[in-house]
Length: 296
Image (cartoon, rainbow, N blue to C red; front, side):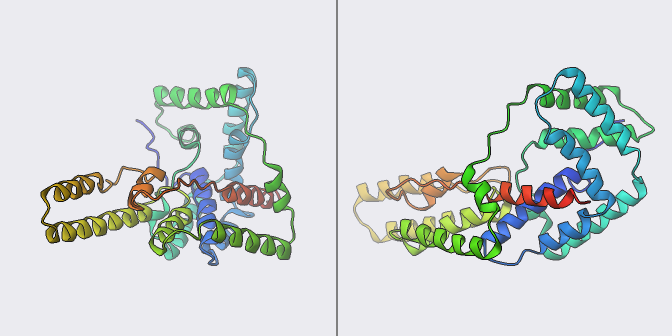
């Protein structure tokens, strides 16, 4: 019998999603409930200690196959120390807390780095504690983790500017943030109000979430209506054809589609400059939270 993977029960994914939610809330300039949720549920709790098992693999350097097997064996051995009943209860309480502040569909809609490996860790741990074993599933997940530990590319070195920023005191970080915000506003001052709204929504979402997809589809629908109304007022057949062709380029996204820069350039009606947003705040926050958990 196969162990079914569940985002709701995967400690590694729950932690990653909370970090990303903190990032999104911070970029919106609001106090993030996810900070207290993470602190209350991952500091000095069995849930926090179990996350360290995930971290022991996800943060590991490239190692030999023998060393990788030893890491996996240690993972199994340490998982014995936790009460499955307590973990189940703590995860249940965590989901309830998240539900109080966020829509679960949107919260769990964010992309998670190393999703395959995190899912494999969860499934292996659950298989280890299950009475019914599926050897094929165990072997597949073990191979996934072994490949990750032995063949993964070395992590890109942290940019010095991000490392320096994380060491600033609160007042200096606030001042730095304001300066960056002013420079950002100056750079994109030429954009229209609608274009700035699209750019802001893309930045706030951090990843392709249902809310961003819904926002995009609303813009597409609005543009189509505008084009339709314009077409009805035009008598020239050639111009009508051109407007129809433009409208065909505007297509709404399905639930499985991701929103990327190309989609948003289209919704901005082919503005002159191509822009790209690179957010390092998630990694910075994650490192800070992991340091906090080391005290656990």
